[in-house]
Amino acid sequence: MQTLTEQDLRQIVPAVYAEGPSSKASERYAFIPTYPLIDRIRHRGWEPVRAHQSKRTQDKFHAIHSITFRDPDQQSIVGNTLPEVTLINSHDLSKRYILLAGFFRLVCSNGMIVSAGIGESRDSRIHLDDANIDIQANLESALTKIGDAMGTIEQWQQIELPWSARQEFARDAIIIKNGGDAIWSKHFNPFEFLVTRREQDKKNDLWTVFNVVQENITKGGVMGVTRETRPITQVRPLIKINQDLWQLAEKYGKLHGRN
Image 1 (cartoon, rainbow, N blue to C red):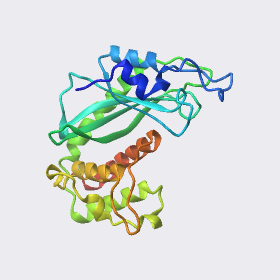
Image 2: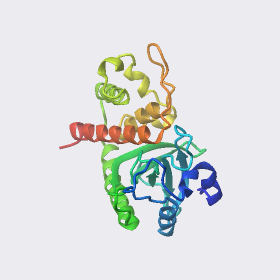
Image 3: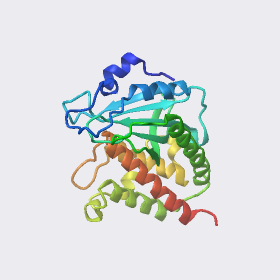
Image 4: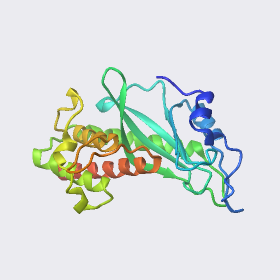
């Protein structure tokens, strides 16, 4: 596992090292620096492995940014996945501090990863009068959610979806991707979002179907009637689509699971 150094973080996510809030912030705004939070998570044994910063603003020291951590001692678990936690923050009033629990699925021999966000996050009451953060409690909450989700994944691996249900799942996912616009979603064939990108994904269980559809939606490159889908790269839309897709899979798990 390759971890990010402080030099890496300064280059990729300079907002991590901001010393104060944006000039847009009011006097009530409680500035929450990111780098002390990183230090606390690292002290818990989790190391940064990925980082991203929004490029939608020219103010690089106050943009929304995310850092994803992984326990270097953690082996892959059910479904060949690894648990991760992602810290998200900003200093320009665009986003509150969040610690998000999630999974990444290891695929292919080159270590390529496919996001599979849990859809559960710990959202603290901060950035307004109160800057006290119990990062330890937040992290423990995220790890508890990971433990619960592991059991969910094991259940999904045992649920075989018939072809009609797989198509319906993909159709619902397309609607989610298009912001709930069912009419616009008709420009895309659900089958295209069920096309697998690797041999080991040619299975029909709910966990695999979820991952195939999620990858096709977030990575882009799926051809519709008139256009090709684009990858989702911005922090907030990526989090939302992962959360919504996880909730969709939970719905199908209840519909098609053993009673």
